[in-house]
Length: 187
Image (cartoon, rainbow, N blue to C red; front, side, top):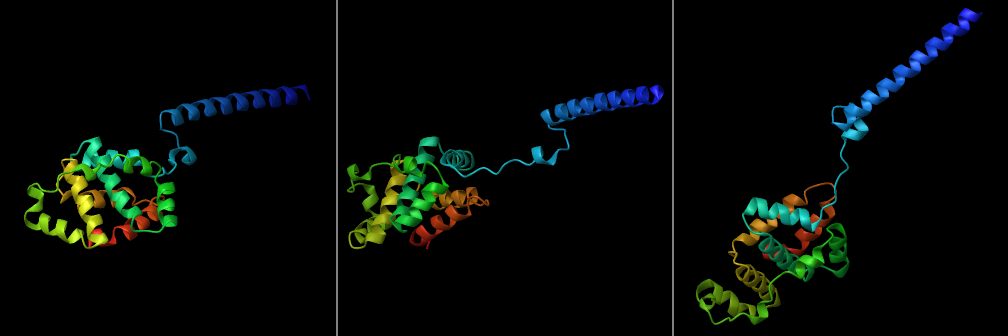
């Protein structure tokens, strides 16, 4: 009987030591990313935010952070004016910091409209915007991009980059509101 108790005690101690050793080894592997614990290897999905969007714009479009922030602010302002209050509120919740970006768009009310921009197609858009709120909003986005030192042709690049950034499970709702608000600007 004594032999059985000694044998069980030794067996329990060695199993316990082995279990602790395995746990320690697994912890070390997980710490350096080599563990096979699938719960720790699956990264939590990140919610879209304006910092990530600005980073993506600066890296993919060769613009600086001020241009990226101001340009997206102008686009978000356009969207705000073309969707319901509820939809825009939903967008702002889905992408924290949208209101901050809108605060970084240039104030175009101080720009001189008698410059070279009043010639050619830009001049036609300027004249037409006096008679249509929709065209005025589009013209305002164009002017804001120009005030940031960006070509108006880049508006579509900003939009497609934002759509790509929001092309995640967490960003689908925001992407839908963005697309709804951009209808006239895109087409």
